[in-house]
Image (cartoon, rainbow, N blue to C red; front, side, top):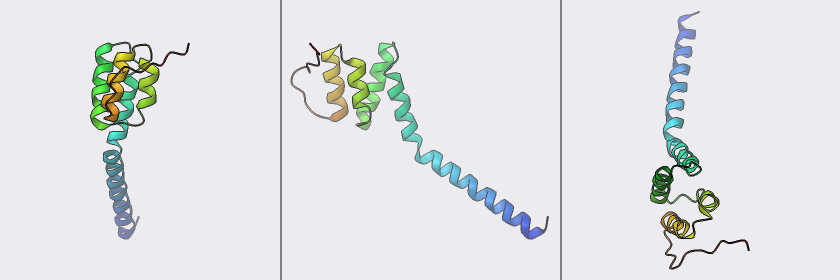
Length: 99
């Protein structure tokens, strides 16, 4: 391989590495949000509370439906979680009964 070919190969590899690092850094919040949304389906109440707190601090719109489906049986907890995520003030618990 010629000297010019090695230079091009190293430059391309370095540029590719820079792009990979930039993409990883840019998508960090997306993967953290997905992780917290996944924790909503766990049985551990503390993990759910932590996930809701984190999602609420980020005001995650993608988490709203998951929170509703996960917490639909506990209306008070659901109202608190939605209030934290959306920043809205819900004065009374939501009634999501299907009866």
